[in-house]
Length: 132
Image (cartoon, rainbow, N blue to C red; front, side):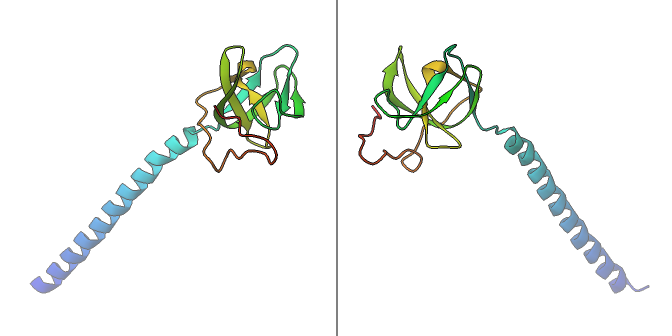
């Protein structure tokens, strides 16, 4: 075998080894990110009030009721706003699966709930925005 054939094979080996190293680094990065994404659990809350609680059309007790939740019910929480103060707590949660609000006073959440942005929280037509 000639020296140029050995060099050509060496370059091919180095090139292949480099590609394998890059692929391994990429897969390590992807695998390292996967647990962090899997750990990002969507927040939920559990109704604490022994008498249950009403869901509201917007974050205020002046808003029409849109439903009722019994004590112990688990609710998916999308985001929160500061609005009407209920017993020293002015936080209200927007439910994840429907456009209803519940007072945080009567809900124990499983972790951080983000604040709503303008797209998530829009006032209902005919009612004033209750964010304080």
